[in-house]
Amino acid sequence: MIRFDRFTLENGLRVIVHQDTATPTVVMNILYDVGARDEVPEQTGFAHLFEHLMFGGSVNIPEYDEPLQLAGGENNAYTSNDLTNYYIQIPKENIETAFWLESDRMLSLAFSEKSLEVQRKVVCEEFKEHYLEKPYGDAWFKLRELAYKNHPYRWMTIGKELSHIENARLQDVKDFFFKHYRPNKAVMVIAGNITTEEVKALTEKWFGDIPAGEPVGRQLPAEQLQTEARKETITAAVPLDAFYKCWHMGNRLSAEYYVADLLTDILGGGESSRLFEKLVKELQLFVNIQCYHMGSIDPGIICIEGKLVKGVDMKRAEAAVEEVLRLLKETPVPESELQKVKNKTESIMAFEDMSLLNRANSLAFYELLGDAGMMNTELDRYGAVTTNDIRETAKKIFREENSSTLYYHSQD
Image (tube, rainbow, N blue to C red):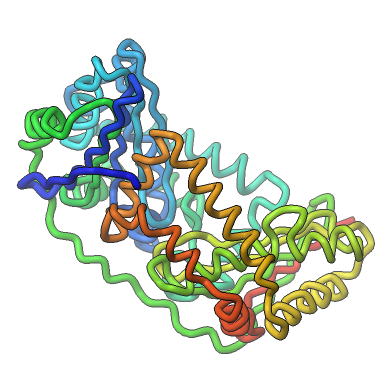
């Protein structure tokens, strides 16, 4: 049981305090309710660009990293299609440094053409290195556009096109910041050897005067039900043929999510999974194969992805994947196999909860979903999944008309 207190400032900043007296450090985790799904199709990659810009100095603090390092702190951040998360780990006696730094950049970044130009170059290089020049780097650009026709999940967090970042103007950047990086769009978690009273005093002192932003109602275009299979073939200079197949699944708060999460483990969660045992070890059609989902808040996708053994026909490989799925849909999963993946899920969650940083991150995420207390009930949701749930959900998801397939061929 993870215990916590919560309070909300007048400006809308939600604060969660998780006290752990067994550690000399404190974690500050600030999650902003903004991700790539909040961008417009003509200006993508902004949420990820801000992950970089937020470290380029704020209105009263020209350097972010230097004072944090002097205080013995460490920090990092990540962006997804759903959210942006910043976190600091720092000795308890220097926690006010974290409040000072984070409140100043929530107040306002030090917007300048120079800072934008520096970070724009960094992001453009990242785009080229990881997506344009890397083997298979464009696969998910193709897959997202294949699977999504309406919802903004159809573009990557890095952005839809390199030109969107290259052409980003300072005014566009300012507008995006003051719309999304506001107290009423944030969840702050303070975890460690600190009391709720201490956190309340520091939060009021450093964040209380930051003005709330305009209420931002999220009205994203819903993805329509897919009614026919979509397929695309590309050829590129890659070492091996690769196979990608995706299916739509329920959103993060649906009962289907928990079943689908266990399903991906049964199918492709490691070397003892069904796909690996059958297609890599026994039939030797794939060099490797995995099954995973995107973990997205809005309705997401499950993907099976594998690199083929050289010389193996793509259609034969796909037919073998479909045969594994057919057995899953027609024959109940043994109780022992389901229990095995439930045990694995429980041990992963228990291991993650050992880290103060992970606990803070999870509390922020569940609060974004609606209630930080969900952190204490997630395991029960997995535990309630039955073998019949697995079979019925497999039948619902793994329909050919619900699929998008990318055949990625090597030029050789």
